[in-house]
Length: 213
Image (tube, rainbow, N blue to C red; front, side, top):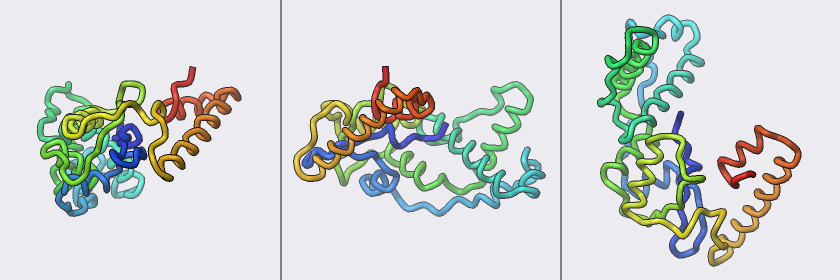
C-alpha cells in the first residue's frame, strides 16, 4: 500500500490552522536535496525482467502498475531504503521473481521518486526550517510502515499537538475559522452518507474524517 499523506496532519504553532503534510512542504522544511526524475523507461526495459514482454506490448499500463507496486514496496520499509530487502527469503516462485524484479528495477531507477526521497531524507536527518507539530495518527494507526516511521520522526523533532484536528477547537485567525467551518460541513456530509447506508463512502470518510459508529 502506498503512503497516504492524508494520515499525516500538522498544526501550525501560531495560527492553529491544520493542514495535511505534503511532499513539497516536507521537502522545503527539511532542505531535502533535489533529485533527478527516475528513469522509468530504462528501469522497465531491463532484460529478463518478469514483465519484459508485457512492457513491449502495453508500456503505459504496465508502467502504471509497476510504479504503484514499487511505491508499495518502498512504503513497506521503515526507512525508504530497498537495499535491505532480501528476495531470497521467499520460496522460489512468481512472488520471489517479481520481488527480485522490482528490486532490480529500483536499482536501475537511479533514485526514488521525489516524494519518497524527501521522506527518506527526513527520517535520516529531520526537519529544521519549519515547526511541524504532528496530530496523532487517525484512529491510532497508519496505512504503511513508512508513514508510521515518518510520523515518529516528526514527533521526536517537533512534538505533538493537543489532539487530531477533528477533536480540537478552531485556531486563531480567519484561516482557523474557515477550517472549522469546512470541517463541520464535512462531518455533516459524513453523517448523511452513513444514514443513507452508503458503506463505501462511509468507510472512506471514516478513515479520513470521523469515527463512524
